[in-house]
Length: 224
Image 1 (tube, one colour):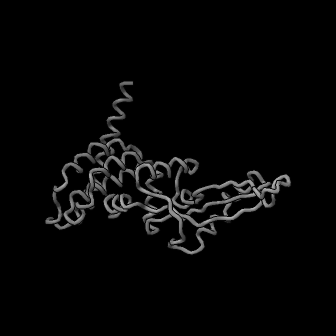
Image 2 (cartoon, helix red, strand yellow):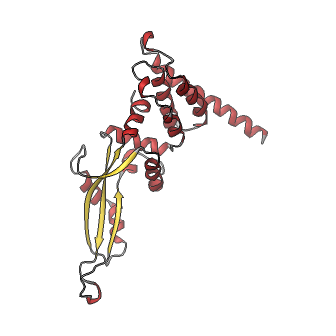
Image 3 (cartoon, helix red, strand yellow):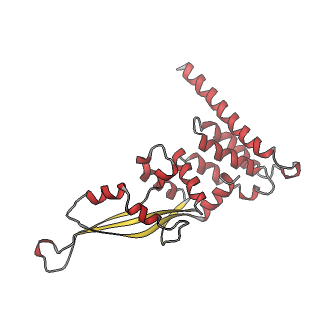
């Protein structure tokens, strides 16, 4: 137990050293008059929390970017203190998702899959049919290279809980045909195979989009 504690302490020191090095590499590229300490609370909080991001290079990079932002006169305005606690609550795969969304104008395509029976059940003359709806079906974890795509629901619920993303209707996406690609994927086929008596399938175009808070987070922690 003592040895384990020593190794953990060493890992924390190594992790913090990595974050400081990554931030330093950014600051070294700036002219001296742009380096400041206008956000000392942010800088100090980063150094306190970043040491726990052991073996999580994506989270380390976000902390490093935030630290560099807090010490840059042109980016310090984006370095909100809340972002330290937000990064602390992110999984590495969630950081990958955010990086993917940032590269796609802050959006990620999803679909609302609607399955229904093609005819009135049991001769019921009321006209009622059984319907199943699957919200926010997407390929984001696959496209962003997540290590544990089966945790998809947890990832997106956490990102929504933190106020970083929200669900929206619409077709405004950077690439045409992305919604159709989701509908034609093996992931949707597996959903179609559930309760095959619901033989009528259609979909609505939806998406995840970064909130205002999320865009601010990206400016401070992912944009370099």
